Image 1: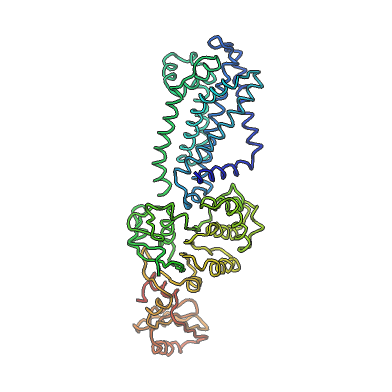
Image 2: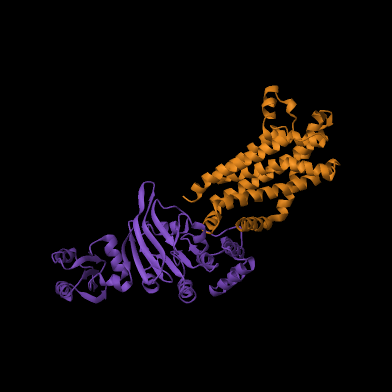
Length: 250
Length: 308
C-alpha cells in the first residue's frame, strides 16, 4: 500500500508542474463538447424520449470527458513510465511489485477521471443551468464511476504495450470517436440502424450510459451494467498484470 | 567470513547467445568486490539479475541468504543499484526523485529528504537539488545516480561502472565516499578501469565470455603469473619487423609486440630480457621499462590469450 501511495505521489509531483494548464483542460473539455457538439446538435435533435436534447446530453458530456481524461492519463503515464522516462527501471530496482505499479497508475488515472467528473458536474451545471439534488448526484456518481475505472484500466493497459506517442494519439482519437459518437453518449442510439443499436445496447458500458441518462429523468439506472463493467475491468487488469510481470522483468 | 552474495551456476541467454554461463562466486559481507571484463562480457547482465531487473535462465543466487527468485522485494529493499546508463526521472527535480526513491525503500518523506541533503552535501551537488536532470551534465547525472543508489542506506551496493565518464575530482569523491562512509557495506562493482579495481577492491574477478576466469585478491592473482614481468624497450626510430621475427624464435619471450617505437614483451626470467636486449642493441634504443604483471596484464592475457 505504501508503495502505491509513493507512486501516486510521484505522479502528482510530476502533474503539479503544469497544474494550471491541466486544470484549464479539465474545465474546457466538457465546455467544448457542450459548445461544439451539444449546441449544434440541439438544432437538429430538439428532444430525445420527450427530454430536451440539451438536458439529455448532459450525462453524455460527463461520461465522455471523464472517460477520456482517465483513459488518456492512464495511457500517457504508463507509456512514459515504461518507454520514455526510465521511471520503470527506477521502480523495478526498488521493492515495488509490478502489481503496485499497475495499481498506482490506474488509480492515478481514476483520480484524475473523478476530478474531471466533479468539474464536469459543476461546469455543465453552470452553462446548462441544470443542477441535481445531492442524492441524484451520488447515484449518478455510482453509475458513472465503474466506467471511469474501466477507462483508467484500459488506458494503463495500452500504455504497457504501445510505445510511440503517435500511436497513442491515433488510439486516443479512435477511442474518443467510438466512445462519444458510437455509444449513445452524444447521439441517441435510436438514430443508428436498428441492428447496430441493438448490439450496442447489449454492451455493459452502453447500459451505464443509458442508465445515467435514465437517472436524470428520475428513472432507474443500470446496476447490471455497472457491475459487469467493474468485473470486466478486474479481469482485464489481472490478465494484463500477469503478462506485464514477464514483460517488465525479462 | 559470512557470505553476502552467493551465485551458483548462473546462466543467461539473449536471443540464443549465452551471456552468462555457469557463473559461480561469492562476495563476503562488508567487502568490496570488483568484476572486470570486456564490453559484452556479461557484467551488467549479472548486476541486473541480482537486482531483479532481468531473470536468470538457470542457477541460484542469494543475497544475505535470501533467494533472489522468490524474495526479490526483500532483497531490493536492502540493495542499492547504480546502472551503467543514467536513468534519472526527467519529470522530477533531483531532490524530488531522491525522496521518492528513498520512500520506495521504506524511508519516511522526512528521512528521505534528510538523507538526500546529506548525500548531496557529501557528493557536492547541493546546489543542483532543485534542478531537473535534463539540465545537468553527464558527470553530475552519474553522481546523482550514485547518491540515489545509497540514499536509503542499503546493506548491499551494486554499482555498474560507477565512475565511467566522470572527471578525476568527481571520481575521487565517489571513491573516498565508498572508502570512508560505506566501509561496512558489501559493495560489488564493475569497471574497465584497472587501477581503480586494484586500488579499491579487496577481491577481483575477471569475467570473460560469461564466465569467471580468475577470482581472488590482487596478490593471489598476481601470484598465479609466477613472477611474469612485462618489459618495454623504446627505440629512437620504429624498429623493423625483422626484430619481431627474430624474437619469435625464443619461446620464453612471450607475446613480443611492436607498437610504434616501442617493443613490448613478457618473460618469467631476467635471462630472457637480456637475450632480447642483446638483439635489440642492433637498433638505437632510447629507454627501458620493467614492471611486474598487474591486473591489466592478466586481463589482456585472458582475453587475448598467450600468457597462459
